[in-house]
Amino acid sequence: QVQLVESGGGAVQSGGSLRLACRASAPSGYTLKDYYMGWFRQGPGNLRDGVASIDSEGKTKYGDSAKGRFTISRDFDKHIHYLQMEDLEPEDTGLYYCVADWEAIPMSRVRRNEIGYWGPGTQVTVSS
Image 1 (tube, rainbow, N blue to C red):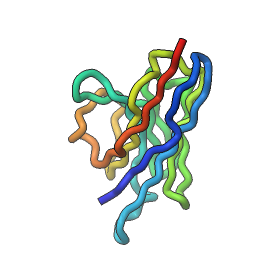
Image 2: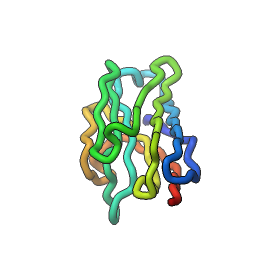
Image 3: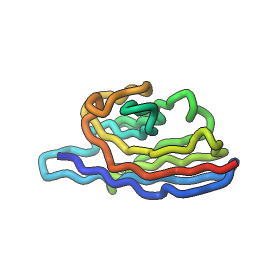
Image 4: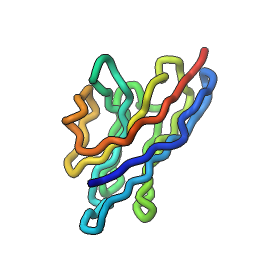
């Protein structure tokens, strides 16, 4: 089992910045460097919206709301991936989850069971 733990959430004013971090761990036999990693935000009901993903070669994808403002990166040696969020808006408020999967992570609205592993989430609150 891959375990994920987020950090870095908090409250900021509109226009501010935050950096989220997600540390991954797994038993021996799991090659975390080969996993796709990403970030989702809680959506309506039990759905979650794709924010950003990064693959084993460092290639990135972004959801529409994140393009141009957010940057995903990963430290392959430390098994940590980051989400740098700039120019935050009140609409960015929500519970952010880090994710990991053996297969490509879609940047769309998904149900929890469509992605392999989820962290518990970290709250981001942006005030106007």
